[in-house]
Image 1 (cartoon, each protein chain N blue to C red):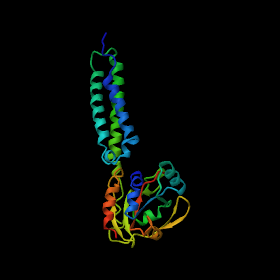
Image 2 (tube, each protein chain N blue to C red):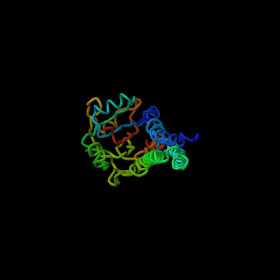
Image 3 (cartoon, one colour):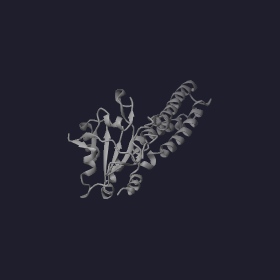
Image 4 (cartoon, one colour):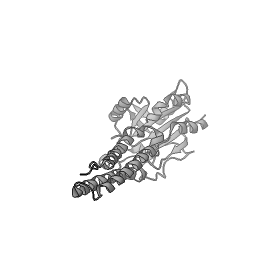
Length: 108
Length: 152
């Protein structure tokens, strides 16, 4: 999240809109964004419905055995087609902005 | 009397072990180069491990002023140190890989499933809207969806 925020200008320049999605409530995300200075959009999928639709549920991995999302990134073009996917094998390893910006070059 | 009373390798090794553990989360996690593969933390752990090993050997040497106490303290500190290193290695290299296969996740070339979710201001936002609302004054080229574990 921090690296995305730092590269926000580059994403803007590339015409890419970054969106963060988790099971956190809007209130929790608002606090996080405020504390950490994040200015891009955070969406709340409290019941993990969209996370399930994207087959990203990490069952029972949250607090009190709550279902959460596994880390994943998708680049979607303006027609709604997936153009790049990153499903990390280790949740400490996330996609870097350079990688995503490189992948975004195929978008028209 | 001996001048080798204070077992410094043991204690320095132990403090360094704790420092290595906490600095990962306080410092190194913020930089992809030390987060994706925690080499800086592992280097610190390696140094700490050598010191702990030296400390344990020293603690079990026959010339300690209080041999029994020395052995007990040395054993406890040594085991705690190894335990901290073990917890870190386990969390980073084993537990962090326990992720679902996600074979049904949208593939490249597929249509991204639509959704409508609530943003931090309570507004309902759809994927379609995200794909059409202007970025930097013109139509967006795309949307980057970042799914994350959340902070609960």
